[in-house]
Length: 319
Image 1 (cartoon, rainbow, N blue to C red):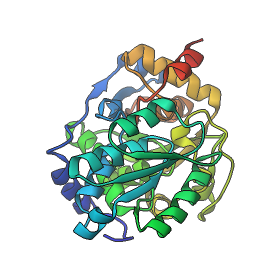
Image 2 (image 1 turned 90 degrees about the horizontal axis):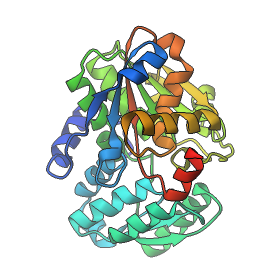
Image 3 (image 1 turned 135 degrees about the horizontal axis):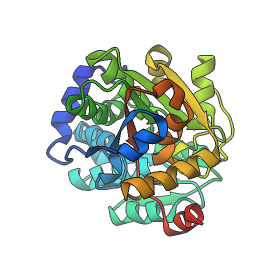
Image 4 (image 1 turned 120 degrees about the vertical axis):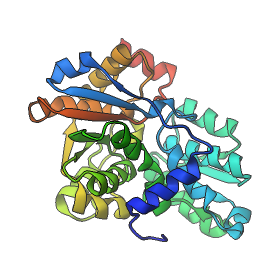
């Protein structure tokens, strides 16, 4: 699978790999959310994962498939938090050293969680991409197996299992709405939906304050832009090539939402679902609200990708 686009067969293999370690997450219908957009709304609770976010599916799948030589070398990654947590969790499972680079000022809840899982955490740079550039340099110098947060087929196949679970439990979902930072989750959703039920549409959602993936999709080339969103899981400065190639071919629509849209959606999901939800985790619901007229009368699955909101962020959201 090195560098290749994963297939639904790879997703099925990923499920076999991760199933001893990760249970399927809940998919609940919320009538109050449904009434607000005139549709039947189901929320996929990836915030119930052991690290509080969907990315752990990809981390376990990738680390489980490392060669012995790669395991001995150790792995490295750049992250705003959830990608690093997923690799730290998997590294602890399989006894692999994990070194993670985060931007200065990264979410302390996520940083502490990575350290608790045994990862070495190094803060560098103003944003994710400065941390990523430094991580790539150090990985070459030290010989780590660098794990990109999007351009990894095994990661995409792993996170795609969330959409596999959705369509197995509710096979007549009309639209799956997915948050987009780097795009691995949306790419995985497209692979599964278009293979198992081509009539199911996949819609990506990103913040207009960090629109690099959206612009890359629209222009059919990898684009760099700003990252000014409070939702760190969406804050990527540049599009990722492998997810973008999949999205160019298979994604049905892409929506930008405002920071106020994200805040409102986060508060509403916390209130209605009685779950902790982070900003990126609410992006899909913010997007569904924005295109409510197009979703009216249909069955919609909204992926709540994570719940790693720290107390300071929570107070700000609820004030």
